[in-house]
Length: 456
Length: 105
Image (cartoon, rainbow over all chains, first blue to last red; front, side):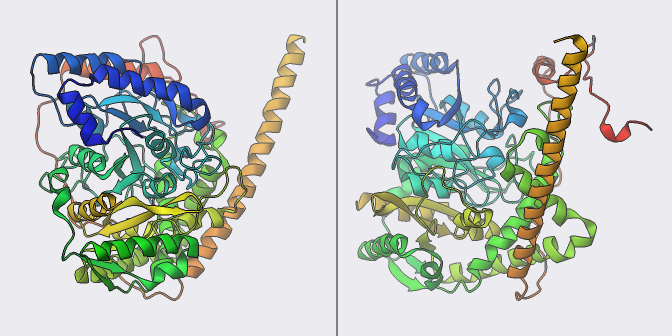
């Protein structure tokens, strides 16, 4: 994977590596590998010109932003002016974004160079990276296996060293699941911390834009670039801007880390063996490990799918092919259609109380249970995904596929933050530790992740 | 192929793909209902609580007053939007097909 994000950034700022050289290296690597990996749907034709502009600024001694010259991949459901935001669907395959999302404005302002749009599960409906209309993405960490999804291309691009950082989106686990399968770092921020303006939604009450990176420093740097209040959004948190990257090395002595017996009930033993090893390491690093209760953890998956489908059905009504794109039901894949049909069924007036209202009550329960558990500890750690990634092309029933989200969807329901870092390998396959934090607890989550990373 | 033959062929393709679409929608719709039912069963024994529609309780309901975007920005946005519209009239206005549900009214 080459040098770490901090070392590369220093090299660019000190003139040892130009932004142009960095972009050229990324484009060469994409050209070399992407026919097989399929991490990108489209490349930015202006990337080199944008890098040259950063180099000119650096030469003149002008102030540059904190991402100066770093190469960035963007999930194809975020609007980047002039590039296609396809959502990996035939529905929007010709949709060229007429504007920049708020996070893109912030990335550009910080000097990040967008190299292209990443592949993903169609409309973020998938946990494997196989439902893209542009073909499935490979897992660079373990060829022949799924990379996870739906931010499949973003995680794969990082794992293959095709770019420095990526922006993905997480609804029920779509950053954390592929981060775990590909052995990279991923963060789902607290609901409302990162502006959602310009994101083509899957489920508006769950969607969060967040970073994927090769290391914790990279994830922290990207998160502090994109996080912060946007007064034009009704659900943006009015939180002060935070600096995460400066406080990573504090260590975790006296941090209280919670684990739950529920995790080993829901996850395979091969996964749990690696996770238990990571928890032991955190204990050795000075953290106090205590058990917490999450009695209804497994119930969140059903509530998540009910709410998500209802919101997705509503969100897709605009894809009628009249103003742009094509009518979604005519060209989408089976999984997208299934979720539209689920949402249609749930949203009927006579079904509202039985399904939707009930699911919203389970969301209250999850918030309460996580709130109580996190009152006793600083973070809760456990597996990200209950099983190892399957081989590409294996036929799974919808229920088997949805089961990948068992351990990530509760965090989405609770609206808290979580990060994923590689804990180790099971039979040569990466296994990610999920570090779950309080509302706006990203700083502590990142510190715990960095402590584990540094101990490797 | 004669013009008539060409049109007939296209109509046949349209009909068969329409039938396939309807069958696919029906089949996927059936599996969707089964999934929703199984989800509902999973939550049956849980306590009845107040519903949470969004995980944060504070909303920005009013936006700050600000300057309108510049004329050239609006013109550029319009130009970009026109370029992705499926159809436009001579003045550049969006032209859309009449929706199927209003046909025959």
